[in-house]
Image (cartoon, rainbow, N blue to C red; front, side, top):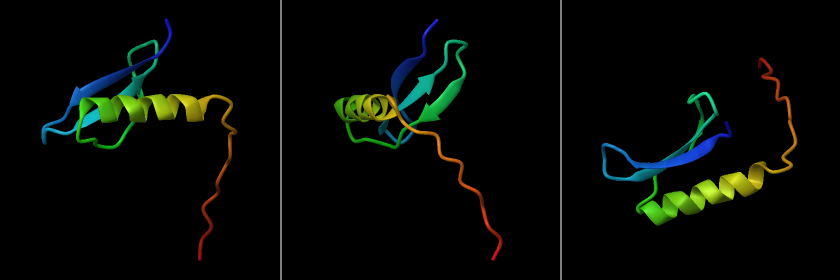
Length: 63
């Protein structure tokens, strides 16, 4: 089963999205939006940005 974006209202009345894998596990989540349409737009932007995105390994360096 393919993953899916779910849009929901949080406890503070803001709207958010998360991406669930086919097994139901949340694998990514978005910021808070004032409207359901805003959250949907954020999810669509994340979907577009993820297509063809590169993997970059960032190592933490001690100072």
